[in-house]
Length: 116
Length: 111
Image (cartoon, helix red, strand yellow):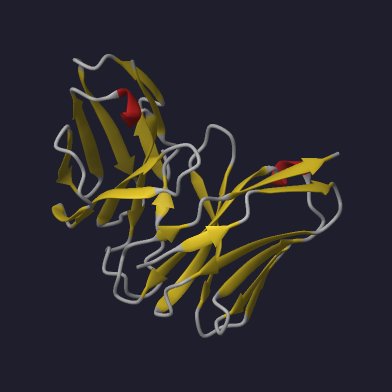
């Protein structure tokens, strides 16, 4: 596997379910990100982890709970979601998250989430 | 705050050139990026430009940056059907790992 992978690619869940999204990067990066992509809206940054520590939470509701056990893996735990949470959830990684140099972000293919 | 604007739709014939435009508001932007998103896929980095450059060419792609007007464009030469996608510009300030994205510009290539 190369690059950034995400599983599952598609997920349908009810509002009372609990599920988790997984992201793995094989680039040796130290920063990982969760984004939400909704129709007709710009990408919204949700969380940033740098060297396993959360450095940014962009006012995300507590029904979204991130976890970063190591620099290669990032999870997004979901519980009691709302239909408006249906979106494409994208994971990205970058070298060190410092914003210095190019620190280019590389994206995974996303998980298409539908909340019924 | 950061704000990135893009027009929404462009239709182009195969073999022609296509130009996608983007404007941004953050004058402290240091890096500006172009990403491509094909249907059902994530964002693929196409190219980026540092703010002290006016132009960058990478094979069929030419990026032009007008820092005074905060205007960024992406020109795709000899557009192919595989170029049909949504193109996002994004900007980032120095020492800031936040990317501000535009809403994207859908390019449809007509054979």
